[in-house]
Length: 384
Image 1 (cartoon, rainbow, N blue to C red):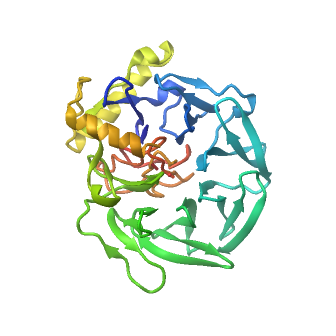
Image 2: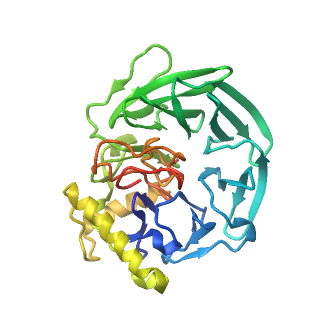
């Protein structure tokens, strides 16, 4: 499963092709955060409540009454999926599976963004000129709390994570800053004029970020970023399991090992939505959403194929994408806050035009996006 700026792309069970799932299929106008449950359906943070997207492409409301109401973010800790929402003035963290939703943490503080490392959940918010971070165990137990003055003219914060560390992407009046929230200090690691994707950790332990679409190696301390000349411009960086990937103008490529640069997904091979899988009253809207997304692709020179045939190249790409499939995220998400699988509430639309078709790969390709109130750049969205 991939998260696009125009919806989701789901691999067809009988072929190697991917088919568009329009937002109208779950009753919305926007592409929203989505994460695949382990061995089950994909959870979507729908505008009216959590939705479940089955393998046949049909979306239904989550059966638990506690799932009602909009969520702003999704993340995965191990095999467990979590949703963040605000209800009746309280921030709530929900544990989600295919049949039940459980409240694990609530707070009167307005937490706005969610991410997870290998062993903890991170909540972040920006309030009164300060960055706040709360670390939780899977059962909601508080593990730690950090606070620091925000960068000058900060407007939002979006939580990011690798397996080992939590990071904060801060939007300001001057651009974007990526760093860590420490005791009474925001430790900046990278800055950009428009977008920062990542960080993503490779199998050899290196950290990559994309600064205004240019992939670089991230190092702590005084060492400068080192651009990687052999990679194209990208709009998201994320990983799922052992596989790291990036969103390019044309689709998704691998980042790890000997397969660096190998195509995992091509936008040109995306199939139109199957309207028979959409509620009758939503079919006209779904058709319009597809045509709008297809037009956006055409403006950057990508002509989506109309047939379902998949050649050997497409089949190999589909199998590779399945092996990497999706956090959010993420789902990568080209959220700018970046393309890393998660979207930040209230973030402005990124400048730069239509080539940001790849916002983030979601559900199967994990990506850290993420939220409904935030406008995303055009195209495919983290995986968080």
